[in-house]
Length: 210
Image 1 (cartoon, rainbow, N blue to C red):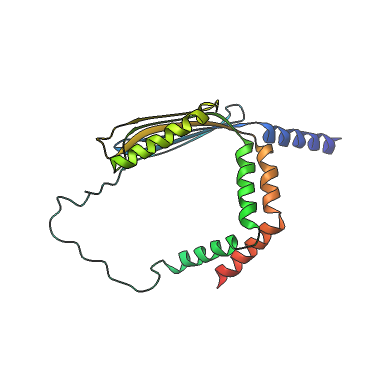
Image 2: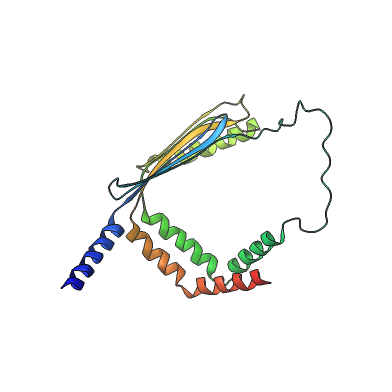
């Protein structure tokens, strides 16, 4: 009886864990600095985790102005400048993507994951312009062409206030998603256990060992 009770308890606990939604809140802001705030809530608020990254000043083309002296030129090297480890990872990635049927399987897996995510709200607000006023105009036209379709999405909102006198783009974005672990496990298991994925992993492993 004790073993049966323990088994039922573990089964109920596993079911609770898999069916309890995980709420994700993401917020990104780009002004003088770029910051990202991510908050996760699970098990009805019993588990909370937050992550914040910010304070990185945006790079500007005039960052080197005002400095005296001349910079030492970088030594010229022939061939690939990447470290051997990065070259091996790149070859492994290319080998995996070169496996017959794997790119299609990868795109299908990405689509299954997107369908498993329940968006609650996604909003983007932009201000300013691009480096070229003509590019700003073309981007505005593209956003205007997409607006009718975007308005049909109940959880998505996009706003852009263009300024042709500015050469930088600032703004903020926020998104709220609800993930159910049980809905994500099946696409992940189907992708990982598929023969095409296994062949791609073997090809990447062989290429990385070279």
